[in-house]
Length: 480
Image (cartoon, rainbow, N blue to C red; front, top):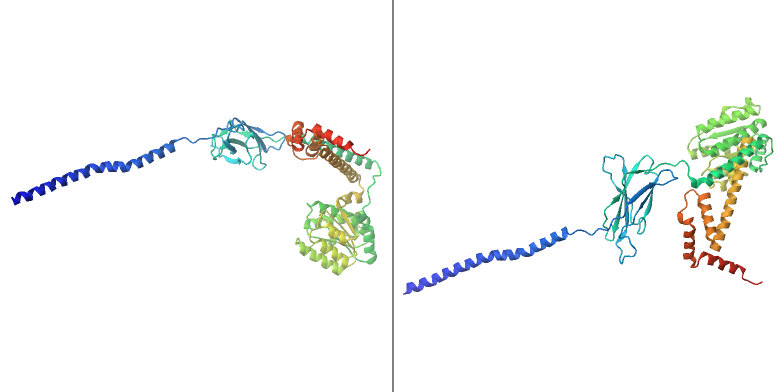
């Protein structure tokens, strides 16, 4: 009895254990499947998102590239049709602009490498033309390919639109926009030729007296009376500087006068080539004066290329020898005041001339005579009296008169256009500014009558005709 009672509980326990083990085994795959279901769903969603196509803006229309006419061959004009998304009638903006890419085609068999030329800041909406101008990269001997894309609001680019074949530029021989310059040049050349012809025929061409050059005889004569030397400084630049050339030209006259007066002249230089030129000039001057025996090469000598080393020698020479006349004719910089004040302290007659505007005030303050501006370059014609130089000088004066008249006419037209708001006058001002006196092609909107009238109407709020009538009525009103 007790044995049966012990066997039943053990059997029941065994059955219950087996049932529990089976339930665990059968439930495990279901739980694993339930846990894996969310991950599988997430992966499927991610794959669907990745496979969804990105919305790209519509590309622009056909891209056309042309060589800009009448230029040096460094500008390419590109035009295109606007993208369908570039429409101001749309409810919301779809584009922020365009991007243009350029590639230098060196080998047609290779794939070109494009680089950005102009971004959305340059190629804004509703713009269908761009001038790619680069005088260093774009040259007539090279070919280029272009690509244009539309840029969406989110920064995505459309499909690129490119050229069918590479584009290259050509250099123009003549720019019609500069025809006025050609006409002015021919007019001035005519007057120069005419004055040269008149001077050769013996016609007396009147030239204003230049006080500094008239004082050459006085300065050389004083040096002769006092028995002191003459110091001539041709500047601190080499012979490739036009100021040095002008100074050596004046040295020819000073050297001849010194030879006639039997005065001693010293020409220390800071460039070896200037020394050689000065020696040749002095030798020619003494020969023309009939005193070849009085010339010797030591009159002109080389000191140093160092700026202030050269100046130190000059000031030391002036303090020791105390020349009676000092001529500073050439290119001068920081040393101008040092030389002028040193010469002033020894009581010498000083004549200076330079084309450096910043140094002229120092020479004017400390020297007796100063050749200002063009007087320095006109000295050669003034001193030589040669028909060619005199005719050139007079012809250039005619050019100055023409330039001055054009400036006066331009000022009057600009004032009248500003007061009357007349589109014809504004057109004349722009034409004179860009085509006659300018160096570049005027913008189209500045020479288009309709665009000028529209701009004036936007600025004043009235049509140009109404504005002109209003101005005339205002001018006519007032006390009788």
